[in-house]
Image (cartoon, rainbow, N blue to C red):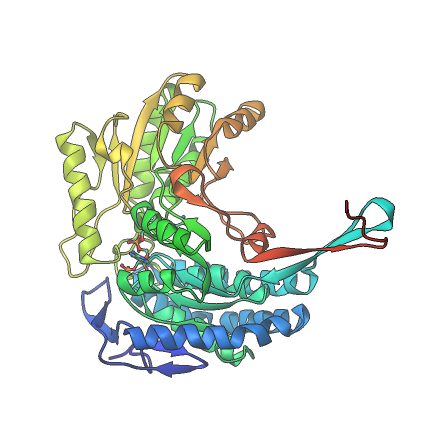
Length: 484
Ligand code: NDP
């Protein structure tokens, strides 16, 4: 098989196989054909990976930040050099168009490796002057072994967004990709070793949820970072709490995007397209509830339909194709279920709505108008190419409705009125907000959710706090006074 890796897992600097694990078939979403067969990790493999990470951790932390940073920056260079090869793998793993994977996956992973590689030498504690000449100082220490668990929409990016800050701080990692997209994390591990990472610093094990659960509960693990759905997040958070482990949770959303009458229609339509149909809608921060003010509604819907008609749907390996299949048969059925429910509940289908008559898991980009807050498609995360357009009249009304959700990942506003834009984002109950754009996630800025959408932040200097802890040292310059 064309995309068959050397083995299923990458442990202690090398590929490792154990065919006793349940088979994992990797399916190319554009055709439905099996392109690789891997095996889920057995308990022996999980143990071996955690032991390797544990063994490697102290020596990795003992290296200087400059040395660790150099490894990460070298890995970033290798990823960029191999961008084409990695993008082809990512397209076959996820079905995302090569047009997207070439600019948003290995490149985004390389950005994270470069950014945290650059930060590594400057990670320090501080000196705190105290009364009588006493002082305290803090030492920034690694947490230990970190577990990363990924979703299937951005497998390379997630492997790097978790690995890069973890390794920069002197932790080691065992990463478990989603079993739907297991191929690219192996490449990340390979590249880190080629860049000079000592063996055991970054390990990859494949597996279903049970493997993730075994990793999360192991006493050798100090931290768990999950990208996944809210139900999985709840389980993983609870399991981690048993061992008082640190967590980062990047979970799902049902984010609002508000388009006011005075918005630039073309920009608002572009934002709505990016925030609903990029990666066939399989992006956690998507603005899937598009609130459009009454005065601009018809212009917005007309232009949206015209622009969507230009989407090039087809073979994701064709560089001209801008819209590919969804990730799996299962995901396609879930999305079709939501489309049927929307029709049954009275939403007006204004674009798409059908499965394409061809092999693979292709759905049309789909838009519903006249959606109301109580409809299922306005309340639940669909994770597919379905946009809900909802009407609104006033700012006050739309803010209350935008926030009336358990999720709080992202939110966006399109308006030419600057004060309104800032007032609106101040009012959003969401971790990542956009003014006159949508869904950009540069490594320099914190990314993450509030409410049920997550705990902690990825990217930016803030991520360092989630992969290290401070040891406080009190130093006395005086005699010790005791009461008796
Ligand atoms: P899931 O929650 O189904 O799975 C996420 C990962 O967790 C998978 O690797 C899964 O393994 C694993 N897992 C499942 N059960 C357990 C368990 N009990 N203990 C430990 N690990 C477990 O999400 P999907 O893969 O379906 O991804 C889609 C979801 O991810 C959406 O809700 C989306 O919003 C969210 N997401 C959030 C992002 C963010 O940054 N906020 C970014 C991207 C996606 P397996 O797949 O083998 O079951």
